[in-house]
Length: 498
Image 1 (spheres, one colour):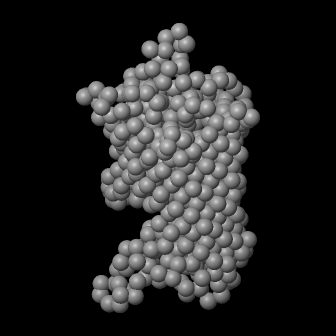
Image 2 (cartoon, rainbow, N blue to C red):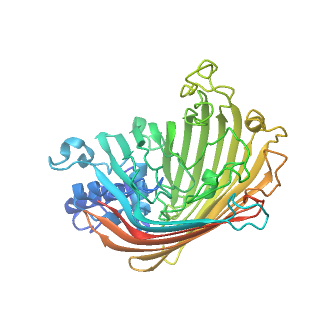
Image 3 (tube, one colour):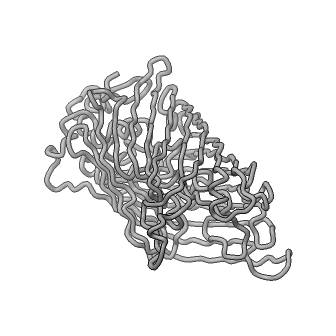
């Protein structure tokens, strides 16, 4: 099918000429454009490690953001997913920067302001196994500030950039970039429809890999997907990190699927008439320069990631169903470059780490919709291995190859109009510990997240929602005296992009 088509009402229509009223294709042209661009408006705000929204594109094309998004931004509907896959293009002259009016500037801002309360139990205080020492904290503040720019440089050449300023005064840090640390979170160029083929699109730079479900577009603002970030040996935490004295063991691998990565990606998509859906694939070659930076200073080896999906009767998030398979083969450096560690200063040279050892991830993902798209149930399951050398090289005497599995299941339900409810269950189960001295279930995670989101303002200039979210996370045997720990985080506030 034509690469400029998008499915609507059971049929594929032209993004450039057939989205709204069939009796006015000329008027529809800018309408379709705007709605796609609006999706970008929401696609690109990396809030926590987080979600995208770019209202600048809605303003550019005089469209409301919800043309490309589900009821609650930043989640994309089928139309928005197609716009993203086409490289933020609709296949008309309006894709060209020269067609943009002078007053338009493709920059947006997203942040979330509100109140957060958090607790954690079983800290390293006291002198008996019955110690119930815990910490609690609360604050008014904001969870992130993203300055974003996405768009096209020329036909079939698109770009993306997200800058996160230092947030030393943010106060609320759960789910946001570390306080005080500025970061260029996204910076890439993408070449689309190479040789006129939608199966050939090439991206280079720093970007989110094609995860089963994107954290950048997740509407749960204050809780990352556990399986994307779990590291054997380090207890998983949300609002608080465990202090010295709580059990842990060394692991040279701190790679997280949910983090943005440095690398190149080849991806593509093709409509499949037999399924009335879309086939998609993504293959990435990633640098491990950011892996174990605090120890080896990051590595100089390459890693591989791939994801393939097939959808039925839509993209599978607001219409239809989707199945997928993904896998990762990586290497983490275990030692710093000898020259950089020889004498003062001892700070390792970034990207020069050596003796890289392997790890792997493989999994499946599923998504289905019901009740005319008001209900979306989705999730993924992943099996993971970290080689024993990732532990033995860090001083673990009785090292094993660590094996664990984890995943999540989430349900999003549109209650009425702009009101949406969410529930997600995350889990991790360890099969073999990287250190034989630790119990098999050390670090196992069970996490429940519930959220309610009221989208009270959606225009071509601004998207805003009142968001309340509560997460309870329990980790096995990670307390100071071997007990299970409980963490609770409550956030309520306004999430907005403009």
